Structure formats: structure tokens, C-alpha cells
Image (cartoon, rainbow, N blue to C red; front, side, top):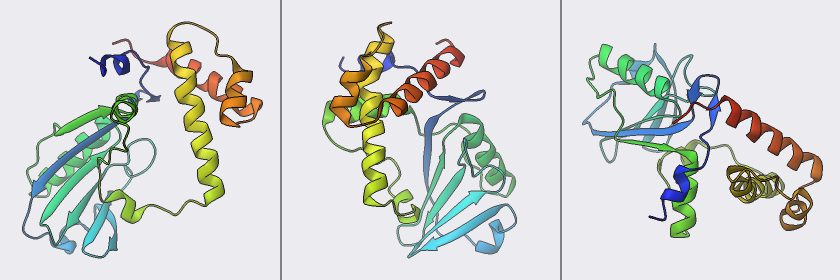
Length: 196
């Protein structure tokens, strides 16, 4: 029942694509690199290789998969439905028949709701951190402020109320200009969001 609160939050949209976590996992013994070099850009981190689908491995799709040589696992990941479908179509055409439906499909707002309820960070893709660019402590502090501002702002927006921007600035330490930009962005996103 607590998760129902997340169903009222607006989904994030980029163009015509909803931003989601779409993931699927498969057992696989071996994956020859020469097999995927033409379609994918890849990089290694220990026994794990990240393969980004060319022309689909950027905002908003981030269509990619990870091969863990040690665990013999293939993890497919995308941030849009179209990106996940293109990834599965490409792999199927290359001789790896995979399901076009993800094992897990989750909106960012529902993930945030679940984390808030459980009071813990939920890691959906254990491999992504191996390839993430390091964020400076100062930059991370700014990102934390923005995330906290959005989390505090959404309940008022969903209830049709104007958030108290000065109160938000005091609570989060974010500057007023940034808070106003976030508010305008959220309102614009909500106006363009598809009806559920």
C-alpha cells in the first residue's frame, strides 16, 4: 500500500520516450568479442565487459549490456522501452535470441518511492558502478541538493499546490534560481507526460 504513493508521481519523459529502468538477465557460457565489435562499443573492468549499442548508447536510451565472464551472466539494460527493444532485436539478429520484454521495468519515481519506504539504496544494475565516471565530492553534494529539492517539491506539485521555494532553499541549501529552474522543468515535463 505504501508503494501506491509512487503511482501518483509523474513519470520522466524525454521527447516521446518515458525514462525507465529496463533490465533482463541471462545465463551464458561465453561471448566472443569479435561477434559484437561491429554493433557495439565496449570497455572492460576486470572480468566484466560493458557493450554499448552504437547510436543507442546515449541519452535517453543508454542501450547496453554487460557480460560477466566469472559468473557467466549477460545483463541487458536500457533507460527507454525503444532502447531495450532495439538492443534485443540487435542481439537476436546476431544469433542470441533474447526476449524483447524486460524482466524488470521500473519508473525512476517508483524506484525513489521504494528506496524511501525501505530506507536503503536499491541497486538494480550491479555492473554500472564499475564503469561510472568518478564524481567529485563537491559535485556530488550539489547533486544531492538537487535530488532532495525534487523529492520535497513533488508532493506539492502532485497536489496542485505551489511549493514554498524559500522553505526549500533553507532546507536543502540549493539556490533560488536553481530551485525555480527545477520547478519549471518538472511542470514542463508533466505537461508533456502521457496520460496513464
